[in-house]
Length: 190
Image 1 (cartoon, rainbow, N blue to C red):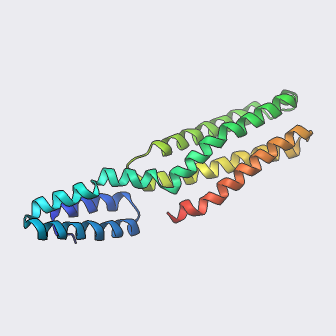
Image 2 (tube, rainbow, N blue to C red; image 1 turned 90 degrees about the vertical axis):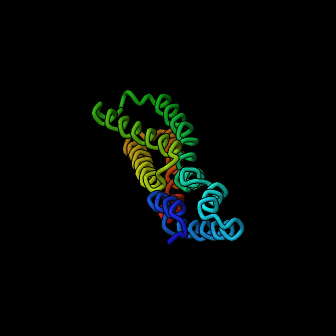
Image 3 (cartoon, rainbow, N blue to C red; image 1 turned 135 degrees about the horizontal axis):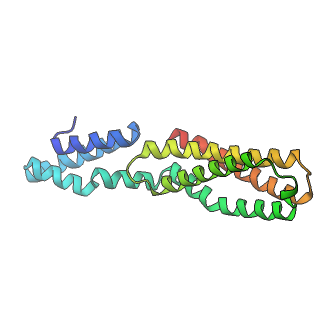
């Protein structure tokens, strides 16, 4: 337990927001900094405030952890390459005259709704500043959603009139699926 209630309060907030190993490490450093300032000043309240100011408050620390988290990095990657993959598929499907053999309207609407949900989740993950665990859960869901959507496009292309331009779209989706799958273990371990 921390030597001062202000320190304990900060650690309680961090424990609600960050993974336990990170909080344990922060607790050690924060308590050590508090002890140094307490020995120097002899004033527990001033030492606690100074230690927290030096370390940063719970909001600042949480925002820094999330900013550098695998979840945010994965979300940024997917948001960056998503429009490129979408452009490839759009060009390929228009060039292949997809409207002459497209799936039923309900399937297209459902696909579009899932795509919008994935994009919204990615953007919210990028903007998250306080909930490390929520960002991790969100990026896992968005990653799985991205791979499912790409898998559906690959399956659609392989089951249809596989003209050579569709191979470009298949390659783009397989590339994004591989990148997404490669990043998931790091996100899950964080």
